[in-house]
Length: 459
Image (tube, rainbow, N blue to C red):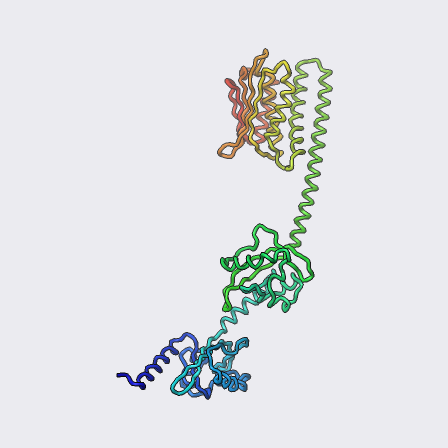
């Protein structure tokens, strides 16, 4: 049979073991403020041996500057004992044996015993936590961007000097206020829901990715911003550290750049327009000269030159009508060239020559477009002139495509009589020009002379 004394002894032993096993410093004091029990963590925390503390006044562990008021506050607690944090809202300090003070948090718990009410104080040394908080504060303060720390309710807990400069508020005007004070009115209604959504999935990321963000200054001016969000775990719970960058200067530079590019586009359009007009003038001069030339060979040479000029004019015309002055839609160029050549060589008496164009929409820079256009001009004009003698009917096919290897393939073929084994100087000039232009493009030129006559250029 267990006696009341045995139970009391057992209970005291259980309590001693629980106090000793606690990772926090534990001090048990009586109504007079004398220390009844301490654990190993208290010895380590305050630098005293256990026998130096037992029966001593608890004020021995209180800094001198707070001792005068401590007995009165202790009596108040014993009058209304309940479990609570000590000195809530105030900074608390403990006194080490060597005389140094250190910050602490203290929880008070009343315990009823046979000898009356005792108070068990759980003490946590928060030196490292405060050091980490101070490091964070210094890092936030030194940041080149505006930094705002907000809690789960959206209230501002911390702001740095850059945030003061950005928004025009003093720090005291920001701390404790809702973050929505910095959000333009037209966005405020949606902000709480967005904040709750972020807290449900807190990850470091940019805010409003893909959208233009704006913040509201104290003077009512809106400024364009970029915001980075970072979740921070604290003793008070999850908080958000927002890094705010004022991008007003960048936006102004972008607008200036857009304006400069627009001016450049207008200038380039004018240049291409004037080049095209000048080439048309040359084309007209050659046409006038043709009216006074009777020699057939001379007329052919002048017509060839005229078509080469037209091919370059078509490219500049395409650029002038385009929104992109750096690249040419080569399919449009080929269609324009073929129309010109059909008009020059395929007169009403040669309606039996059919021309087919199958060109994919491929953009090429102007430095590649002009030589490629000249190649098309040479090969198609040669087919018109030589592939179908004696009014022989036939077809000319031009195809432009992109290979699986992402190379541009131009193929021009006709089902005419084929290429002669012996070429005159005029024909060889055209072929040499095609070869030279292919070299300029660093392209591979393949020639199949007959059935059908095929020229393949791979760029």
